[in-house]
Length: 93
Image 1 (cartoon, rainbow, N blue to C red):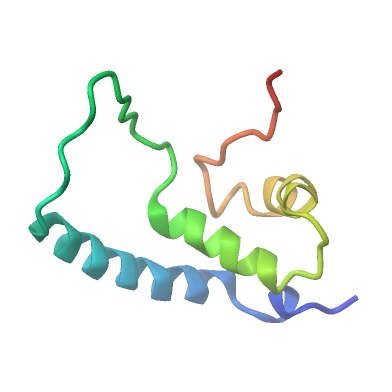
Image 2 (image 1 turned 90 degrees about the vertical axis):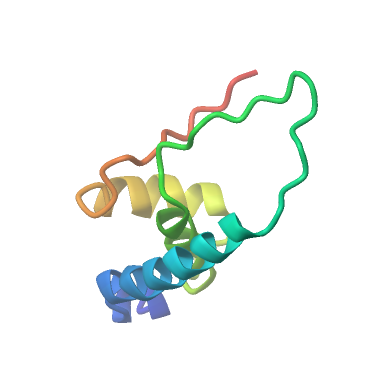
C-alpha cells in the first residue's frame, strides 16, 4: 500500500518543520509568559518540537488508523536512525 508518507522525503519534511520551529520558538521567547503555578513540573523533553511535529504530521498521511499503531510499527521500527531520542510507547497503569 502506497501512502503519502512512503512517497515523501521525511528528511525534507523535518528540515522545513525545523526551520519553522526555530523561527517560532525565538518569537515565542519574546512574548511574556504566565508564571508557573506552585508545584508545576517543567521537565525537558528528550525530543525536539520539530521531531514531534514531523511524526505527528507524518501520521496523518500514513494510512494508519491509530497513532499508537503508526508509532510502534513504523516510527520505532524504521525511523530510529533519523530520530535517535525516540521515546518508548509503554503504557503505565
